[in-house]
Image (cartoon, rainbow, N blue to C red; front, side):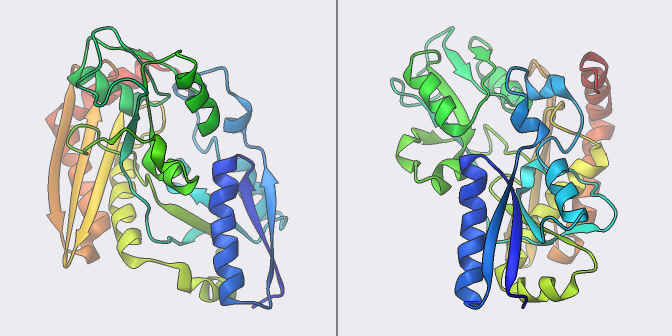
Length: 312
């Protein structure tokens, strides 16, 4: 193990918290190693006044960090897997996937205990088309409004009364020690999570085989299998943040159960199904489920979304 490691990370509080967790684990396992955080501001961090779906492009939160890996400024990178494109630059790969935090979305409200309790016309904040479409499917009467910024900013906007409720990833709140702000976790039958939500990915240079071996203690095979199924589903659909797509895989013994979703932005068309397979076939499972939903009308839904949402 080398004596110094540099972790490339976004500069947000949540990203730094996640990278510090990895840093601490490495230093505990290898006391002779000094680990530094290289904080990098990404394009997604700089654009805060435009919904992500309108920005377009892929890798909004990872490209600059990957550039640091490729030019040697960083030795590894810690990402939220839901931000990582399915296709990575040549020479890089996700080598380590630690154990997953909750993949579920969190409903947060200061006045209403459940989503069902929200009054007609209540303002709900979220920046995700996936969340918007699923909310609209079950509560078309709500006013679903854009919500950008870091976790603290989003909570402050709720507390100021700009929204009656907001939807955030439960994993981020847990990692920041803000579990107490969660009013309720949203069941995946109601709100299917984003691909890779709650999971971290450690990206490395492909030729850095020794570092991969040194960090293998952080790897969780069950999480890696679940995320592989979800990402194969996304890859086959060629989706990004501009498209309402969700997937959630659970590894139970010798079975992977994957549920996938394709929806229209307004929630009026919503396709979902569940398939199972052995863990060794997780990637094929994701591809198979995507093809099933595409054949059932998903392709027409995605074509309509792409035509309505110009990319970069």
